[in-house]
Image (cartoon, rainbow, N blue to C red):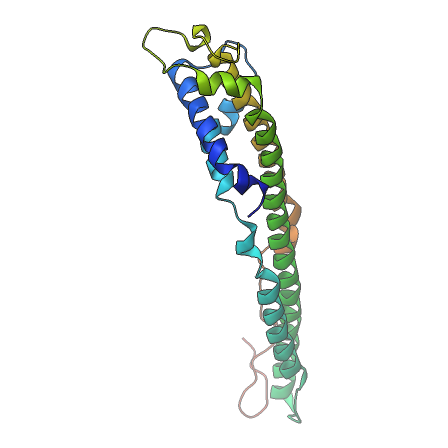
Length: 227
């Protein structure tokens, strides 16, 4: 359990109220929450619940799996390196194909390292995102805006939330918008970092094709077929 888990219950309760107020009457015109809502297409409470579901532990075994694959590829490479005592034209063709396959296996080993590194980078992003959101939530949970949102009367039709009384002396409508903006700004920064990860690793994770060597076919008598 990390600090975000410890804040989960009060955070979900607060952001649920924030979502209700925003859905009922929106936010003040020109408020900074509007571009965040348009970009992320998610309400603050939904964003918080989504981050709560992110768990880096699911990627913890990537290194172990990668090590097993590396050992398997290493053993395969050792078999390919042993060409035996076979000689002749057919042996030469086989050796050429074997060399190409060994090179491909070496490339796969590099892809294993890259995949492990990418998994670790994603796990790091998850941990950073959870910590950043926890810090934001810790700030807003003790704010005057949180008091205004949590103590506001239920929204009634035809009554603007901005005009409702609150124990914190802050109108609950603008208070909900401010809390929502702070949460979504944190999520937006995490979103930018998430978008950068695939671009950073794209070249190292690109599909590795294996093409057979362009070698003439050998006849059973050792001669070469001309196609």
